[in-house]
Length: 380
Image 1: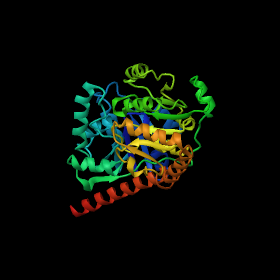
Image 2 (image 1 turned 180 degrees about the horizontal axis):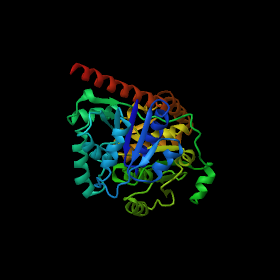
Image 3 (image 1 turned 60 degrees about the horizontal axis):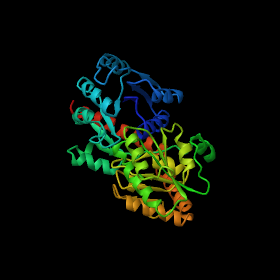
Image 4 (image 1 turned 60 degrees about the vertical axis):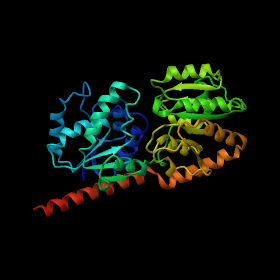
């Protein structure tokens, strides 16, 4: 079986982690290749891991000069499936699909209507183009059952949608530095303090306002706590101003983009996610590797991972009051931090490994090829 994956290559965060984990495992099972359209960190990381990856460089998103190269690649290698990730790859594949009788799949990593929420021009143009492109695909892989239902509610054929949860590699030797060394990097003194952290790009969809407002409420009665925000983005200046206005800058620290996220998760005690929209976020899985309990908004497939009152807590979008309440719950009973963290670790290890994720993809590929073969025979 030969599968070609297409992606922009400028991806960060969960989508990048997903592709890394998926391709490393799938490469052991099938003949695959990845083509991206931007040469950057994404490309070099996968190349270092031995993945067959190539850059077909685009000058701009609308640069279609790469089409001839893609056509030659597809015709030369005779791929069984083309698997896309993200708006740019979806758009390009909309034109490729017209010329080839090959199954085209795309993975729905996020709510595509919210992907460009923070940029008005991109929201109008790119969201519309991606919505049109998505309708042209043969099959879809949703990262959670909630995302599958979202697609069905928007008119996609449920029989063409598969669900595969994100997975993480527990066998991988992850690199991170000691907690004290990590905190020293940012001149943070956390002695005798509980550390609450959020790792998310500083965009509106991640709703850091709720995190900051909850921090303010907790700090009215407890000072033995600090809050770390890992990430950069368009909202940074506004959020910094908000923290200063609330006069909590001594307890809320902006770290910027953290290149070694596992060092961050190793350093914190409690993991938080306040997103308005998610699929099945890797920041929870990555925190789970270090047995960090999670407090998260009940979005996407998060409820399939978090068991309220057992390995974490679920809150409604924008509910800073509930978030502050559950942070205080852990502060008042620190033994629960360890207990919840252990429970989350076991749940993720047993149900959400990258090996299982890859096997699920393999079964989907085999199912699609078999279905297509039977359909072609019936039409003879």
